[in-house]
Length: 466
Image (cartoon, rainbow, N blue to C red; front, side, top):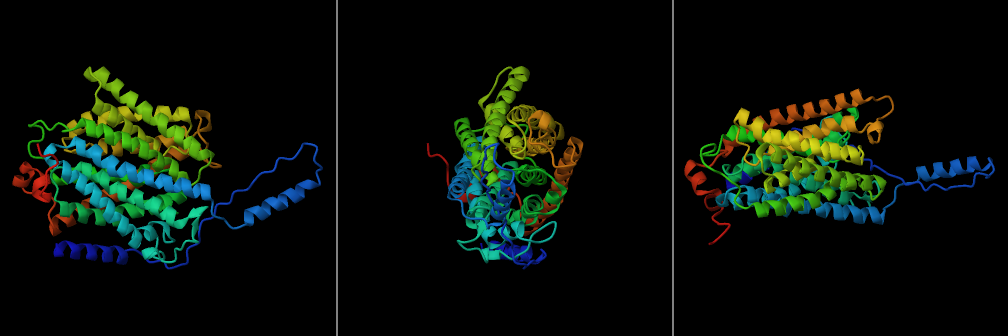
């Protein structure tokens, strides 16, 4: 235990020392709401300068706290917590074998807690304070300078940083599904600290913190690159580097409780509204559009997945419906604030076919053991969602349109660049970090422990006493 704690301390110091420091005073982003006044058509033209002056004065006024937006964001934050614990935990827990259920619950629960503390120490500052094109600085390390008076737009900065904290705490929980049933608990914790520091935080800064991909014009409303592609590839690399589970491909390894998986998927669906809608940071018209887009894409993906199963396998399954829901939620995440409702249906429906192909044909052809299909669902649907955003945001397809001078081809190219940058960064970093963890504490449990199950060998508990 002392060794693990020492390693965590060393990792934190390495993370802080390895990143360029920026102690420049942070400027709070301000969002000002200007109230439009409708005047009669017959109003004298002489009133126009006065109206323009009033508008300019309002635009120059400092942002003020909006109680409605603040309440909305607190609820959104709680919904994202719900989608993680218990949502993701139950979804994954039902998919593994009975002897490993508690180990998965424990990994997600503790990772969620660990990253929450890390985020306050230096994660938030490195992701969202001023820095360079890859990572921020340490001007807000340990939440320095943030008070109850600090605002991000029209909400308290404390609310914003907590909302982003939950994103950071959720993402490594997704990775757990790639190497479930065979990894050491100590390895999960050490890898999580390293990965969030060197993979998640830089990508978050590049996309949302004003870094390289933001400057490039990449569109990622709620985390297609930052969360899903990022986690999906890390999970795939982990699955390959740890190797297959003992008996994989020879012994039956069905989910032990699909009822629990369905409950988890339902909680994910509910909580995802906080994930997507909350990313608008305001209770406004765009939030309403994100709401309907999230619902339609998810519903379409459920129908697409079970239709494909019915067509190719003869029977639609509950696991397929749940997997389709997650694929739709993932695909709409980057796109939800930029495309229209009909585009959302198209995106979700097609994402289900892509993910189903990934978890069956691609996985079978390459022979890797991604235990809970994190790459097939989160990785592939995330990639399709990111690229599809560039197409479906076209006004002719019901989207919000492109920036001045940007064409569909140009935006799609930018989206592809964002995907490739994420894959390369996360791929290289993840390989290095898995190797470091293997050297320090070892990645995989012994064959004896794996056969007995991680619930008893790693945690001394059993999920059920029957």
